[in-house]
Amino acid sequence: MEVRLDRIVEILKDIRPEFDFRASTDFMADGLLDSFDMVTLVSALDKAFAISIDGTEIVPENFQNLAAIGKLLRKYGVNT
Image (cartoon, rainbow, N blue to C red; front, side, top):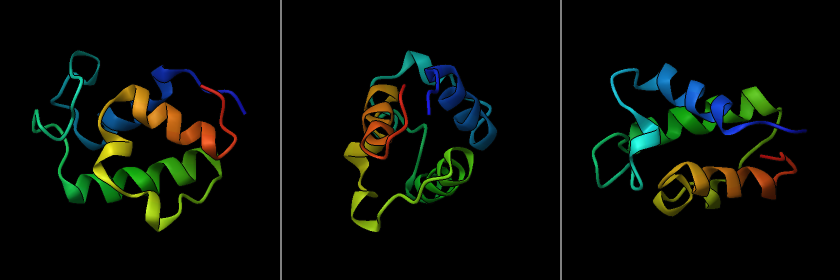
């Protein structure tokens, strides 16, 4: 399955529409996402891409920025 980073941005915007995720290199440090948002994001990614992200993968490093999220999705067979 192939997905552009635009799709990830759309999902992030659904969760936190007030932020520009393309301008940040560290969503957590910049205050764009918190731990609750991360769980919401995992659920949205699971649904959008028909995958099931393992609980051990739900760590800030995997959701730090668009590149990190793309890398995580590739581990589950989603091409970004």
